Amino acid sequence: MYVHLYLGGVITKTLCAGQEAADPETVKGSKTENRADARITITSGFPWNGRVSVKVETESEAAFTIALRIPDWCETYTAKGLEGAQTVVRDGYLYVTKVWKQDGGISLEFPMKVRMIQSNPRVREDIGKVALMRGPVVYCMEEADNGKNLHLLAIGENPQITEKVNSELGEGVVTFYAAGKRRAEDITEDHQLYHTYRRPVYEDVYLQFIPYYTWANRGEGEMQVWVREMEV
Image (cartoon, rainbow, N blue to C red; front, side, top):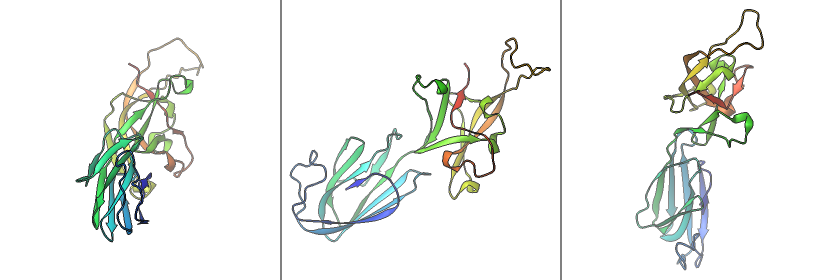
């Protein structure tokens, strides 16, 4: 059985005698000995926290494999409940093969770490810019939190991050602040479009990021996903 998305739910499956294990590379020839009904309950904190519980209930002992997706955005993870199991990680899945007792399960923890994403340098529009993600969620800046002219904002390589639950955007929605800079608007007296170069002046600010899907719910305004990197 494959678990692709960690959404809460209940799966029931009848395992027939002679059914092959789901990962033949790991347990060649492993078969269930008896017909058994399995009830698998998935409880998940996604996408705001990475705690996942996979509870397995069977009428009697049954041997089968559960394949758990390891997300590409996840650099590390922990898994508990693997005692007595054969495990292998392949093609983005953790295969767990064992004789499941009448009441067993696995717990997983995927750290929801804020990280910077960079595009391929061939994407001209995004050169010198980064996007921020937390777990599987892409974030953005919005005018409602950061003011106008979002293109004047910049972020450093290792910014200080402060997370906050923002109920205004929905139940349990996690937002965060990051230390950044705002470039002062260098406006000449006669509002010239071009002028002789002057070294930019920056002020320290905190940039607020919200999940991309939540923007445009607090009135009209600017939005920006790709943020300029701070100049060295």
